[in-house]
Image (cartoon, rainbow, N blue to C red; front, side, top):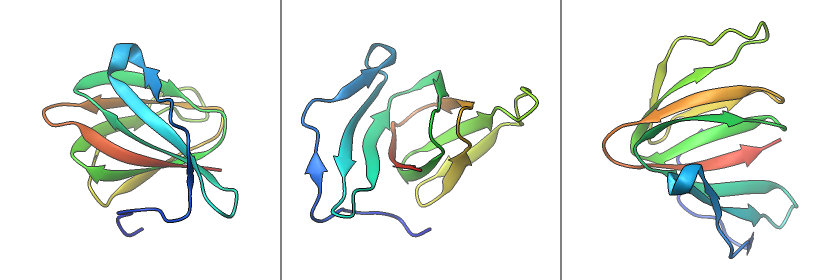
Length: 111
């Protein structure tokens, strides 16, 4: 996956989604084809996210460590992801993400 630098022709939710006392802030966008994404930033923290739909988390800037919850409920080993790298999160699952130092900027591709 190449690094997404911009989206053209989108509808943007102007009200931010603020999670974990402001440690994660994102805005939802809808593309012309109806696909939904969010664009956001995670400040230094260790957080756990739960998913409904499958997600692809694409790093835009910064880096993070991630461990995914497996089908058996156990967590995977930590893996590091930076700008231009992505990781897949299954539907109805969860993942831990750790950001240290500079903020992690991301695009979350749903579905």
